[in-house]
Each structure stands twice: as C-alpha cells, then as structure tokens.
Amino acid sequence: MTSYQAFHKRSIEDRNGFWGEQAELIHWNKKPEQIYDFSKPPFVKWFVGGETNLCYNAVDRHAETNPDGKALVYISTETNEEKTYSFAELRTEVMRMAAIYQALGVKKGDRVLIYMPMIAEAAFAMLACARIGAIHSVVFGGFASHSLATRIDDAKPTVIVSADAGMRGGRPVPYKHLLDEAISLAEHKPAAVLMVNRGLDTEMNVVAGRDVDYATLRAQHINADVPVTWVESSEPSYILYTSGTTGKPKGVQRDTGGYAVALAASMKHIYCGNPGETFFSTSDIGWVVGHSYIIYGPLIAGMATIMYEGTPLRPDAGIWWKICEEQQVTVMFSAPTAIRVLKKQDPAFLKKYDLSRLRALYCAGEPMDETSHQWMMDELGIPVIDHYWQTETGWAMLSLMPGVEKQGVQLGSPGFPVYGYDVRLFRDDGSECGPNEKGIVGVVPPLPPGCLSTVWGDDKRFVSTYFTLFQEPLVYSSFDWGIKDDAGYYKILGRTDDVINVAGHRLGTREIEEAVQAHPAIAEVAVVGVADQLKGQMPMAFAVVKDPASVDTPEKVAELEKAVMKIVDGSLGAIARPARVHFISGLPKTRSGKMLRRSIQALAEGRDPGDLTTIEDPSTLEQIRAALVAK
Ligand code: ATP
Ligand code: MG
Image (cartoon, rainbow, N blue to C red):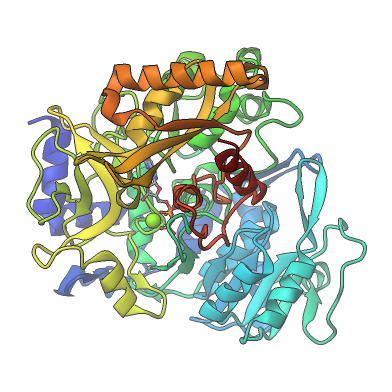
C-alpha cells in the first residue's frame, strides 16, 4: 500500500482519529465534543459542539501574528486599479462592513445577499457576514434579474450588497437596474440595499428609504470594533447555488466548522500552500471555487489571495502570467475552459514572464482534454493538476495530493479519491464496477467535512436529489459518469444525463469530444446524443475551429468533417463516429464556463432548449439552430 492509500484508508476507517487531527489546523473557541454525528443518515454533522468562526480563522488569527503580511490583492485590468491589504487592514475593513450590517439590522443567522463584481468590497462583504454569524448568499454578478429574483426569494435576505456596475472587456456593465428589477419581481423585500458606488454608472437610480451608500456608512463606522460571533460548528455559513448546467440550480447549504477544517486540510495536503505565499485563483466569487479558493482557503492558510477583475486576454494574453510574476504567485487555480482560450493565443506570452515561483496549476470545472492538458504542462513546465469537485462538495473529491505523496500526473485524469471521500463507481443496479468499467460516480456517506449539509430550506430535496439513486446501498450520487484504471486513476466521462447510447454501447460525451479535440484544427467541441430510430442514439458534434479560414468554403467544411470523423473512427471505432459535425463559432455555456449539452441536444432533437437562466451567450443557440437547418 502506498503512503497515500494508507492515508486515505485511515480517513475512512478511523474518521474520529483522522478528522480529529485535521481539526487542529484551525482555531476553536470551544473544542468539538464529538468529531461527527451520523445518527440520522444521510445527514451528517461535523465537529459537534465545537465553536469557531470562519472570519477569525481567515483574518484575525493572522492579523494578530502577522499584521503587516499581505492578505488581499485587488487587481483590476478593467479600471486599472491595484490595491493590497495587509491582514490588519483587511480586519479593519471587515469590521467596518460588519458594523454597517449591524446598523442595518443584520443579526446572527440572517441572510445577506451579495451581488457584486470582483472588487475588494465583495470580499469584505463575505467575511463580514462570517464575522457576525450572518449567512451570505453570493449571486454571480451579471446574472439577469429573473435569476436574481428567484435567489432573493429563496434566501430572503435582510440586506443586499451590490455595486453600481461591473466591468467587462473595458465596458461598464450596470448592475443596479437589474437588481431593482429583481427586487420588484421578488416577493421578498430586503430591509436595505447597500450600494458600493464605483462611479461607473452615472444614471444609477437610488430608492429613498431602502438604498444606502457604502462610502457614507463606512465613514460613520471608521473606528468600528466588532468582535467575532462564535458559532456552533454545524451552523450555516453560506448558501450557494450550483451552476444550473443540468437544470434548476440547487441551493447548497454549507456549515462552518467542517468547512473551515476541510479547507485548511486541503491547503496543506492538496495545494501545498505556505503562509506568506500568494495564491491566485482566476475564478469569480459567484462560484464555489471563488468561495473556497479566492476567499476562505488561502486566507485560512495565511496566504495572500488575488482578486482579479478582468479577462485572461486583456490587455493581452500574458496578463495572468504578468500577475504571477509581479505577485510572486506560488499556487494557481483555473479552469479547462480558460486553458482552451489561452491555447488559441500566441505562446510567446507565456515565455515573457518569470514564473519560477509557480509550483503548480490546479484546474477544475469540466473534463480537461488530454491535448489541452499536455499543452499547458509543456508551456508552463510545472504540474497541471486536474481535480474534480462540485458546488455541493465545496472542495476536491478526486485529485492528486502532493502534500501527502508525490503522484504522477496522468493526462486527462483528476487522479484519486481524496481523503475523507469513499468514492466508488456503480452499475445501474447499485453493484460496484470493476477496474476499467464505466459507471456512475458515487460517494458512500457520510460525506466528509466541508460538503453540503443540506439543500437550503429543503431537507427533502437534499435526500431526493442526492441519495435516492439506489435503494441499497445508500450512496451520494453526483450524476457523473466515470471510469477507473488498474492503477486507480479516475477519469470523468461526462454527466450521466449526457451519456450516449449507440446500439447498446454507452459512451460518455467526453470520450468522443476528447477524440475530436485531438484534431489540430479544432479549438473546442460539444458532442450530444440525438435520438435515432435504428440505433437508439447517434452522436452529433458541434465544433469551433481555431481559424475560421479552415471552414470558409463548403469544400473545406466537407473535408474537415470527414477528417474529424476519421479521427474518431481511429481512436474509438466507427460506433462513436458523429453522424454530423457542425462548425459554429461559439458554444452555449453557463456563466461559469460549462457546456450546456442538454440545450444543444434539445435543439438537435427539435425540442425546447429548457431552462436558460444561467446561459452566457444566448446567440450561440441561434447558431446551432441555423446549423441544423442548413444541413
Ligand atoms: P447543476 O448541478 O446545477 O446542473 P453543475 O453540475 O455544472 O450544475 P457545479 O457544481 O458548478 O454545477 O459543477 C460540478 C460539475 O462539474 C461536476 O459534477 C462535473 O460534472 C463537472 N466537473 C467539475 N470538475 C471536473 C473535472 N475536473 N473533470 C470533469 N468534470 C468536472
Ligand atoms: Mg451538478
């Protein structure tokens, strides 16, 4: 048994011992009385009776021992601002924000909805909630009013924090009118709306008696001294919605103590981040990666974190690497979708900067295709570690864990089950798959610390959504389809909903996409299964080419389509060959960069594309419609 296998085994077989030790990584105002309580499965409570506080662990602890240490770096290539906060300064700002909340009537257990761009005040807003035991619900800035209204009604916030506008590609994106519209659509009305006015929207509407100005209130609370409110470990810290890739988003409820311990342990065993170093996650605070690895994780570990407002391509494709050099970043976190964007740019941008301090780049969110994985590793010359998780889990479920043991990167694989997760692959009947057999990814409960405690306000939905796949055994199902090789490396093949069944052969969308992606002309591709009378289903591909000139005549289109089919034949066999390959210039994705295969499939089968609240660019659906009609 390798040392990692032994580590993992202990985390499952001796939960009390293992997690008791991990719990030492954070500060407890009162030590837990019980490591975990699984007396009402599938619900589990971690570190029962313990009292702690996320803000204390992320900020105060370090402000006491290392007040001048770098904590938060706000960098905007949109407004060309840069500002660094030390731990002491961060604590001061968080206390001011907390005092404002209290003045507006926010109490422990109340919800605060945060609808903000990537600015430092958004971090203050989150940490201030944690400080006073209020529950934040961050909604991705830029979601339209309808999506926002549903989340307002679900969380019923006492206060909403927002800003006049975000910035994207150099242009202001006004938020306030969307927020006003959302509040008028919602049944629940917040007591106050706290507005950070960046001066980007001169026409911003102010509702008297409800909207209050952050700068004014901050000045009134400039000397605020707000002590932390200790909360029992399983009390909720936040609500966060899943990406909505498969339909209606689910409101994940996170606890406090379990989450703090899970993040602290992950910083040690997975990311290997040391106090005093800098962590750079390119995500957004609106997503789970932003919660865990822009705000809480790095700060809990005493690392500085970067809040970057901007795209990977402005002012040029070297911006991320410039930030890495200037901020001496040691650990970075991004997504495959961003890697695929960068792959289309001049690689010279990567060579321009000194990246010698960067030890690893972690990626999550979607399957990492082998071609892009290899490309990124070659360019950076460091491990690119794909890891797999979900909003629900809050932290990685499959990963390499260099802090426990050095394990080799296998292209396209997120590695092994992470300690604490009893991950297995299941057949449809609930029996377990053997090596190299495709199956449903599941976790035998209890879920480890940090995972969702329930669906906000809906225990029934928690059970029926995640735990009713089989009668026996009790399994948490994450609706993904995967495979494990002889050495124990997993591969995620796509979502179970997207599995394509061609004449009895079940194929994960990822398998065909992987093959298509290997063609040098292709930048990105989505493959869906389309109903077929004869074969059950037929794969159909929608591909984006790197260079539009490669498909600018019908002859070239026909030729490339043939070449793509051939490459699929060669790697998977004719059974997997797409019936058609359509070339379009953009694919429908969620705002968090995930492919909306269900909508593509619906269009390809002549159905309604379904719930589109989280779509990034609706015009991509028009392209798909047009492509389908044209052929
Ligand atoms: P919804 O649950 O609302 O349909 P979603 O599943 O996209 O949306 P997230 O929690 O943001 O919401 O995404 C988690 C999912 O992303 C995983 O279940 C998996 O399908 C995919 N995913 C995440 N990381 C990886 C990875 N490293 N490799 C493959 N797939 C991944
Ligand atoms: Mg999901």
